Image (tube, rainbow, N blue to C red; front, side):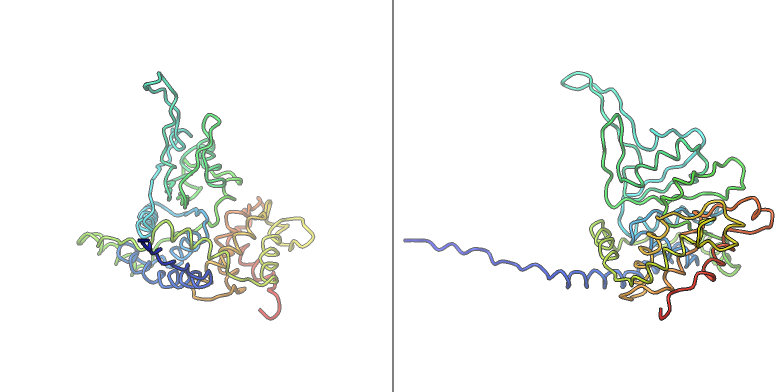
Length: 346
C-alpha cells in the first residue's frame, strides 16, 4: 500500500511593498518610544537626540561637540541599549596607540606550534563611543579612518570585517581647551554630522540635578535589534526626493567653497576651505531619514535646511580674516542658507 506523504504548506513571503510599509510604520512609531526611554535618563537636548537618530537611521557617524559634564557619554550608551547594539567605549588619551583600538597580533602556542593570532580590539562592536577623540594625537585618530569608511580593519595585510551595523559616535571637547589635537579634515569629513551639545536652560538643569541626586533612574528597555536597524538603513534610501531638491543640496554645499564661479562674496572673504561632495550626499540621506521620522513620504527643502548646520559646520574652515572679524562658522552657514534660494514651488 502506498503511503501518501503530505508536503508542508508553502508559506508565501510578504510582498516587498507590504514589508517596506511595515518597516516604515515600525520606524515612525518607534520614535516616540525612543524619546520616552531616553527621557528616563536625559533631560532636554531634543535637537541633539533628533540629529543622532537621523544619523543612526541613515547609517552615518556622528561627532558630538560639547564641554565635559553634558551627558554625552550617557546619551550614546543609552541609545546603544535601546537598539540592542554591542557597545564599546574607548577613552582617547595622549598615550593611546592605534593597536589599542583596532587590535594586534600576538604569538600564541597551539597544537601546531607557535602561531600568530589576531586579537580584536574594542572597535569590533556595533556602536563605538570614541570618548574625547581630540585628546589623542592624529596618528591614533587616523586608526578609525578605515573602519569608518570601509567597515573593516586591516592588520598584517589581513582584512577583518566589522560587525554590522557599525557606528562611531565620537565626543570632543572644544578645540580651545588645552591638551587637545584638532581632527584632520579627512577624518572630519567621514562624520555625517557634527552635533553641538550645549548647556541646558536653567529649568532643565534644575531637573537634572534633582533627578541625579535622588533615586537611581529606571532601566532603559531595548526596542529594536540589529536586523531592524539594517532594514531601517535600506528603507531610508528608498524615500523619494525630487531632482530639484537634490540639486539644491548640492548647490548649498558647493557654495561653501571659496573662489568658485558660484561662490558668494562672503564665502570668498571668510572661508579658506569648503564642503566636499560628501556634504551633499549626507544632506540628502539625512533629509530622507528626517522625512521618515516625521512620518512623511517625501523630502522637502525644509529637511535640507534643518540639517545644514550639523552637516556643514565641521566641513567649513574659516580663514584669519573671519577670525579677526569675529565671524563664526554658524554665522556663515546661516548666511549661506539665506543666500542660496530654494527651487521655486518647493
